Image (cartoon, rainbow, N blue to C red; front, side, top):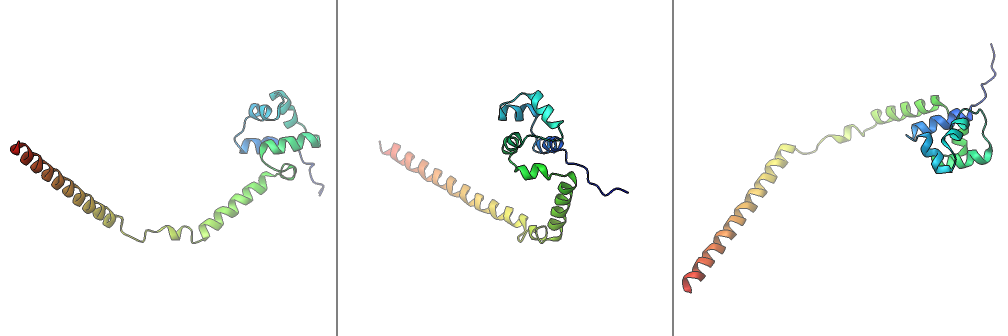
Amino acid sequence: MSTATKPKHIGRNISRIRELKGMKQETLAETIGISQQTVSNIESSETVDEKKLDIIAKALGVTVEAIENFSEESIFNYFNTFNEAVSNSNFINNSVCTFNPLDKMVELYDENKKLYERLVQTEKEKNEYLEKFLKEK
């Protein structure tokens, strides 16, 4: 049984990070000023020149170390840990309403009804005033 680790395939890591960010090869190519074919060639390469790697990392919004140390397993572990932390936290329990939504609706209805009644009363008063004004002329 061999304990030797597989060499990291930097191009594949670039490809996976780009895909996870929802970026197409064409977009990455335009961002760093190269052709889409060149991006394809880089992504199929096991190693990438340090200068190119730095430019690509900046375009992807990650560090060179993130590209070099990227692994799908670590991403899944991160999300699984995050999901477990959220489900074990009080985050979900704190989302319970502390009031009755139906009571709030009734309260809003009552406030709107009062406002409507005041508007109607104001219109009646305005009409009475105008009628009185017209009769005087």
